[in-house]
Length: 415
Picture 1 (tube, rainbow, N blue to C red):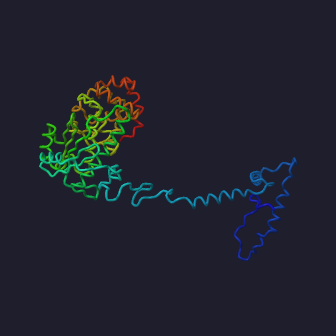
Picture 2: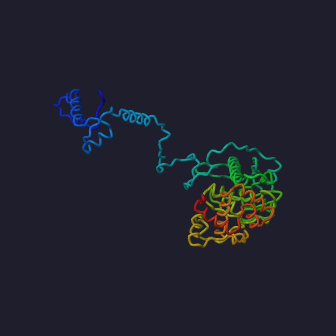
Picture 3: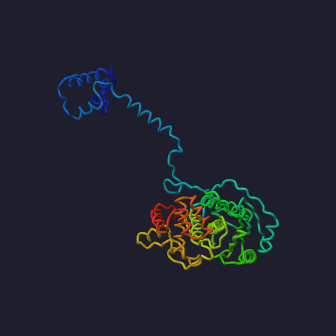
């Protein structure tokens, strides 16, 4: 006997209390089947079937074939699959947050102002941190007059005396804060390494870069003047036989939170690393160094809050705005800054708009080909002629580079 005929067998309605269940008995079903089949022309007949809605159902399901039991099987399998789906596959809603978002950092490391966590505030891979030699540590401690903790990592020597650092609701004393910043320095190094070392032949000249983070202005000033010959109000550098950056925390107008101190350190470490990459050349183009430092800062923090002490122009609309959006507005108006004009700017004459374009050009060159960018930097260290290096490595003249850069700006991931 064939199965249930979905096309022609009426589904039972709501039964009255006094209606007997015999209505759905086997005899009733057989009678319905014989009645409906009697009105269908036999196979091979020339009689045309009426084009009714019922006939369309017949054509779809097939009167002379068994009813589609496979449909029930498929539905049953889909139902079982939905029940057995793992809970992790279902979207979760974070408590107190918007739909589809979840907290990526421990609650005790969240900033009070709700800023997104950087990679340094999440779980980091193990980093080897050990005490530096006592002789090195005592040298900076004697110059600064502060209690200095000296730590050594694979690529940095950290001198640290900042009294207290607060990350969200978690407080770090001098000892634990030194370990935190040692790990953060290695994180910044990894970002620079990914951008600068995909090509053979490139390397840093100095084995360990020295970072001095002191608590007070007086301690910083004494140390910076002795080790770098300068003591700018925001920080001091030294390139060459030593790669060194020094700054301070208490009383620094730029630094009001740990987030700001962290971002400042990353920006200046990026300057150190690109200046120390390959040969030493004090005439290395400013726009490449500035653009690289701001790009590393932007990739980690999605913002650009800090500038070198030689990069402090008058505040304008570009200082805190989204550089990507402002550049796109310039492009829409046909008022973009040319690479030729940017090349002519010394670092102490650059404004915030110049820095934004420097970052955008460096981002474009790296996105085009990381290996070529490494060769480009090495070429500029040998001969700081941007036009010659661009033609030699990328095969472009300045105008061709600008045309390709304009295509890249809408796709750029920088903020």
